[in-house]
Length: 374
Image 1 (cartoon, rainbow, N blue to C red):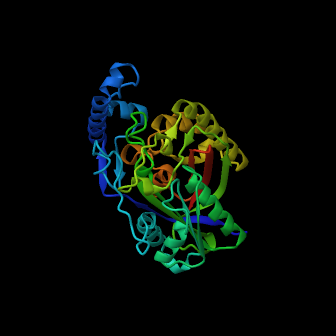
Image 2 (cartoon, rainbow, N blue to C red; image 1 turned 135 degrees about the horizontal axis):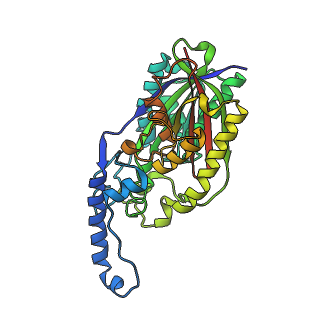
Image 3 (cartoon, one colour; image 1 turned 90 degrees about the vertical axis):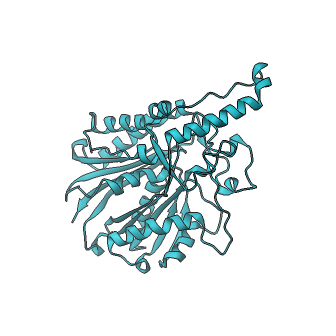
């Protein structure tokens, strides 16, 4: 059995930012247009008028202050309300693969590893831009890695599930190194015309390099233990998933084909599920709350993270113990906990332990206990 370790991480952040104020202005303009177009039906009581949003509502509901997106022009156009993503020819790199290159190269550079020495690429994300060939194989080709690649989708838990898959392959000796990459184009599956969710998501790509610990030469995090669990629920759902509906000429006005969520049920059911999952994982791994120096939690909602952090530690987390990036990036699905890990892990000292956890549609929960070494 070989010991797996995280030796590098990378984050690709799009250049375009949408602030809450910008988003609210666009949504409210759209709502006004919609209400004017449906004035007679509203007056007759046949449909309800769309209510305006506000920056205060968004922060109170989520803790989000802004988000990065690949295209803001369409998102902020009241007559469009979705990103315009250029349709690419079959001879061009796909959007997800192109995003992945930056994050993967940063992870490789941090670890001091050549792409050719990587044995596997796992593209783990919530929404894939095509059914096949696998995005991971395209990333493998563009990077020049060896071995093989495959895609996986466990919604917001995709990154932690991918880490477990890579760690298990390293433990068994079937591979030496793997890149787990999470290109999340969440703006493409969000319904920007729905006041209850128009603020939730942003775009990003993260990557981690996982290696056999005996091959590592620099500082790293050994993966002490991993655990994954799923439980079926329809309370978070996307009936489409492919990005084609965000391209010009292909937008279909089907609310049920975009991101759907029963927020109240999600809060009620997911929070105890995640808290118990982490508690059981820690107990089986012989890790106590006092042993954890940091929690890198899924970045979906500040209230959810505050609840889980308090349950795990048995107290309110101190500043820095549970870093949030939600206010800057919004919900980036599987990438959120990895952004937090990449940005808030270098200060830990050898022997310090932390826990990466993601959770979401499925329901799915994944947790990874790591220890700083070197």
